[in-house]
Image (tube, rainbow, N blue to C red; front, side, top):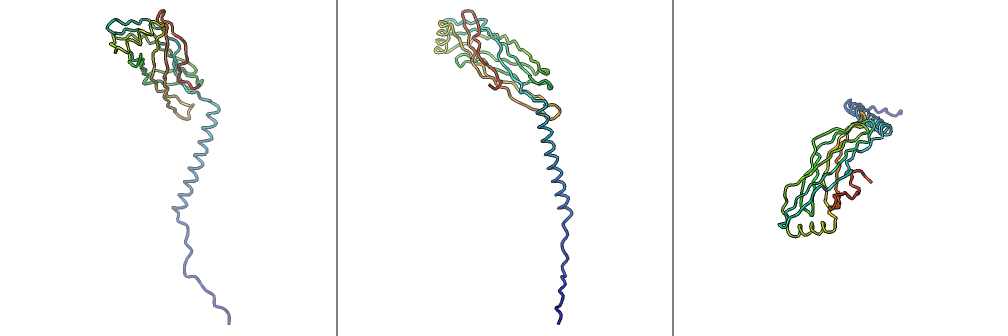
Length: 202
């Protein structure tokens, strides 16, 4: 007797069209991300962007005086340079603010309005910082008096500026340039003792 042929009564399920659409969209997105990454990498190699930075280029202690009551008066001139080493991109600087302190006492605040620095260029800010009479604690006054006798006065400069620049037409980059350094002077003639003070990486 010939074997009986069995017929399936269940139809094979077809793949849902939504699954195919999702797969196609994921493939397109993956290819787009890869292409964008390749384009960005090539653009970086071609443009070779450099991070803008700020530096103290020069300074001078114009005036410093402390009376018997421990009241301090000073005037300092500080030259800060904003440098943009990119040959194909302008840089925008904003929120520029630096505090100048002596023995832990803030004696002046240095600020600048938003400004632009052209391609492969720099902008200098010559801050002339006169302070109002500042009453010091006895220990602070003693430290200043000692510094005057040793002909060495040290200020602390802290602060920063926000920088924005474009890497060609590929992307916009934002960065915070921070300064934190010590400025040393000979008070007898006001000369600045040069030292590295820059937000640029070593």
